[in-house]
Length: 344
Ligand SMILES: Cc1cc2nc3c(=O)[nH]c(=O)nc-3n(C[C@H](O)[C@H](O)[C@H](O)COP(=O)(O)OP(=O)(O)OC[C@H]3O[C@@H](n4cnc5c(N)ncnc54)[C@H](O)[C@@H]3O)c2cc1C
Image (cartoon, rainbow, N blue to C red; front, side):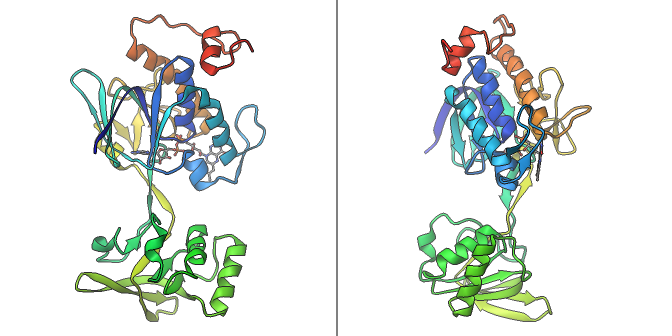
């Protein structure tokens, strides 16, 4: 069923820039909905380096990347933005009345007065198995994420990868699967050492197999995947019976559908001006890593600045007759009311 949402602004991307955009719009009394293809907010900070410290956020001499996202989420709480996570924006079209229609992979449609694209380096997609003839099995017998773990109980499984996801699912499913083989291209793992140690214990106890190698090809019979051939480092081929392959090679960013929306691009980034951070389509703004202009630096700090200026431009775009003036959060009763700190 198509769900339809009418809103002042849609923000595409819940990375640090998109989250701060909610704040800057909220201060001006503008409501928005935030969409992200990932299942959690945070963009690169959460997905690529949650535990790493960041040292160049103003007034925070050191701040963990996930901590920064948690703080931003806390800061934008008063504005009660609608979050739609795990939904990739597939379509964005300007309507005849100047408003925008967006459609997501989950079938949600949005009708918005303005759009901010804060899509970073694009939406993160799982890295695929990388062998021929797998298209028909993806989603049915080849999986890049686990949606329903129970479907793997009592099944012959081969898990690919050497990071935390691969090891976590290997350990989780080992007691429940009919058989389980972990395949990784080398003997060293990126996963937490405790998980690797536990996997080795189970391997020694004969409760799972570990094979060092790479997927070479899949075997199928009458339209059903029945196994996979793995090529080890010495070139030897080994056939593993399998009903399901679980592939955890991490996520790679892809500009994806953003490239199809008629926006002027320069080397996979959206060209914007530096007054409004508006694209070539009036009403569509772009902030953070996804935009480009002379002197652009892909820093979180830059995204924050761009969000502040874009918010004023969006206010003008939505309400051209409204007089604009700069207010300070320290002294503006209207802003304090929106922040829920009236009387502080
Ligand atoms: C290892 C590492 C360390 C870093 N250290 C620092 C540092 O110390 N200081 C610093 O300033 N910067 C640092 N950066 C860079 C910083 O992380 C980026 O500048 C910042 O994340 C950009 O924020 P963003 O919100 O623009 O985009 P992102 O964080 O990339 O978020 C964009 C979001 O948009 C979503 N998206 C894209 N397309 C769609 C779509 N079609 N539909 C739905 N969702 C979509 C993506 O899924 C993603 O979640 C570092 C980067 C890395 C990789």
